[in-house]
Length: 114
Image 1 (cartoon, rainbow, N blue to C red):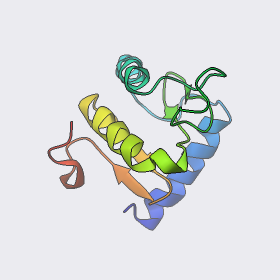
Image 2: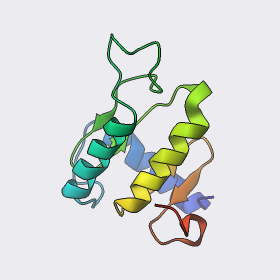
Image 3: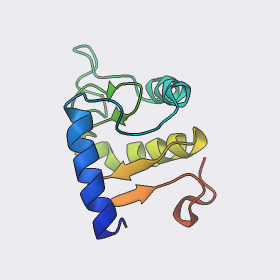
């Protein structure tokens, strides 16, 4: 679980990222590209054609610094596990706002993932 300082900083970052600001985090754009490729291979982005079976409640948002997804509640466990594994595999930090958990590559919590 993120500590109170991390939660406050994450709240600011998420607000800025969702306002489409850049220069907020230092993620590797090629890692994000690889992550998105693997993610949509596992779970295609939301479209009119797949809206009844998609695990997403809105289209996947991404830019050169972040990926933001909203998961359909019935598919949350399956999709969250895949998201965390892909993030770790691509060396990316992941944040679960529902559980207020910060997952960093190589952290004890994520040891063995990916």
